[in-house]
Amino acid sequence: LESHSMGSLMTLFLLKSKNKAWKETFVHSWTAFGGVFAGAASESRLFASGDNEGIIFVKSSSLVDEQRTYETNAWMWPNRNFWQKDHVLVQTPFKNYTVTDTKTFFEDIGFKQGHKMVESTRRLVSNLPAPEVDVYLMLGDQVKTPSTYIYSQGDEKSWFK
Image (tube, rainbow, N blue to C red; front, top):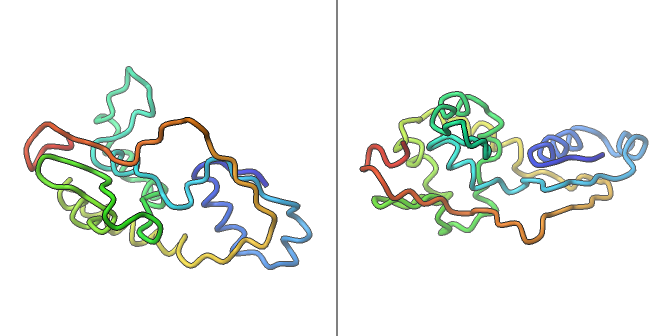
């Protein structure tokens, strides 16, 4: 098996659903390329203000309403079991948000449903057993991956716009 990014969560979920005999028959090994097993800080930016995925002629804010509807984005929310409780995911002039502030974060950006989505997908990746196959992890090297997003404009009600 090979997987990339969120596909690694899907693959782990698949392997969780199969018994050892099935895995021994059909899976030699699994290589996960850049798996987001602990979630990604970029989801906080996506939910707050959208993510144009680097396409410069597309305004991130034009995507936010659509991107908020994908439960897969909630599935990749930073996992509070792995992220440090005091690590700031989003910094604003008014408040900082950590993984322990998920509910408040979604309330403050005016998307309370986001917290419900994160909570409903949390069970998909919590308490997962070992996959019972040989696993190879491929990670990037010398690639800067943001772990905090800083917003410096707006007021308490619009910093994310």
